[in-house]
Length: 403
Image (cartoon, rainbow, N blue to C red):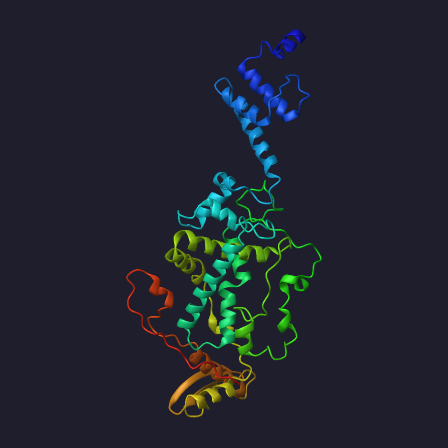
């Protein structure tokens, strides 16, 4: 029996199938195996491919495993997966189908959208440029929707609505809903269907990092930069202090990396499929999210604001009148108060006291004014569609009452 085993390893009697298995065995376990070969790993793969006719199913699977191990070992030198790896990624194909992305968007671009600049500093392989374009598109589409649908909204409410529609927390939640998983560490051997970014070191003060500081010329001028006008000129689209871009190599949070990925997907759709596809993607994934704008108001003195609004619009001064009441002398009274301007009722509210009911009635009147929405709302981007009707100017309000 021992003689037979020695004879099987003789190079003179090796069959093509045995030679294939022997070379694969040598490649897996090193040059110390019995069958010596001077072929390179790539030559081993080509030699093994020439003997597929005699190889069994187990040999073919072993050869595929060696080839994939070789490929992973060669990809270790890259900071992100190579471009051709996106074609064979099942995660990437599933994400492409799950989002119902246009067929003109190749998987290579979607894989690039999953590579954050903190993982790969090369601008040709990360999603920084795509995210910049997607950020501008999201800001434009969201702003025109809010301004054309609710032309009387105060600017602070617009900032809050912008953050609710396209803020980083919302975008990160969307990425989780899409089923995007995070890679433990970025690298060339990682599946292209995973979100790759360099995480912030534990214990790092996020607010003290360079990419979270306000620009130096305005950092010392916070006293006068608290006004609404200064927020328009110097702050971002959410009314927050402007944050400079993160430098390459710095770690980012999972929320910021997920938000950047969603913006990059928006920019990739615009580049490969055009404006109609990008607008359709925005309506399906962003405007479809319900937002109760009436809950974003926060008036400190609604009665005073309503009086100033009526004075500006040349209405009669608002007057509070009791509409109904019950249990005035009981433990739980209820008063219903209406705010009237002449013969017109502006708002109505109920409360446990007359003062509370009057405040709620004034708040209802202010919301009724600021939440006005015209019929047949059209946004400027609708003119980009083929066969669009002639443009009619949208309603432009005088603006909020500055107190």
